[in-house]
Image (cartoon, rainbow, N blue to C red; front, side, top):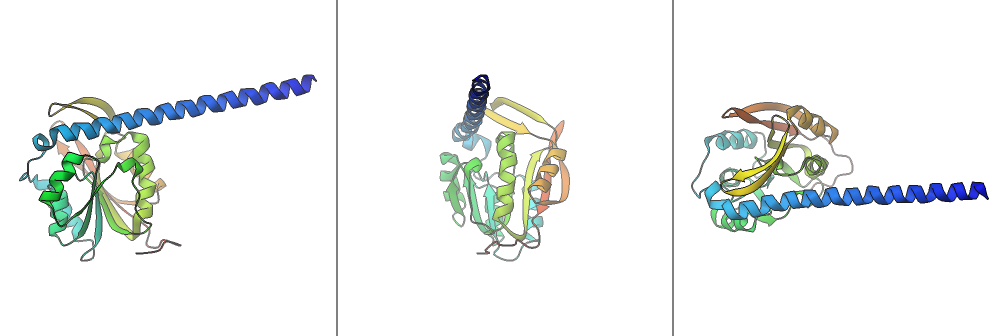
Length: 241
């Protein structure tokens, strides 16, 4: 009888521990969703203040030109966190690439439809985004991944790897140093989270993406990292579309 009681207590204890773990996981997921929604609402509010229709930060031109030079004509490229489509989405389209811009701000996408009519635009949360396997030649994300909580950033990288065709490319701006916080940005509350260059390079390799190079992008007293990574030359079992 004592053995039976001990087994039941152990089983009940394990069940309670599992329930607590599930509750904590749900709480963390809810917090991450709230942080992402803060970003969405922030860009809805500051779209024009953040980026005017004619704004053209010079560094994007070089980044897009270098990427385009590595791709076949008419390559299919997804721009994650495309915002209003300027300047990156527009410059990608001007290069003759098939561009899919993704953003979860309705205000940003409304502007993007007007500013970059050649692009296909999708309203979606990157943390829940899916493309068909091996359907993209490249994925870019400029200053957008850093608005996702770190757990969502890390979980996104293997999915990006699955979307890329053999030898496909991933080009992204990420945080050069670890940092996390919420602050005012053009008058709206905004969330950011950076893992640091070394962690991003490790995560890319874990996801099956090989870093090609990383470059520091200075900005005032700090800066970000621009990283180019490549998918393997072959993708067994992947159907190329």
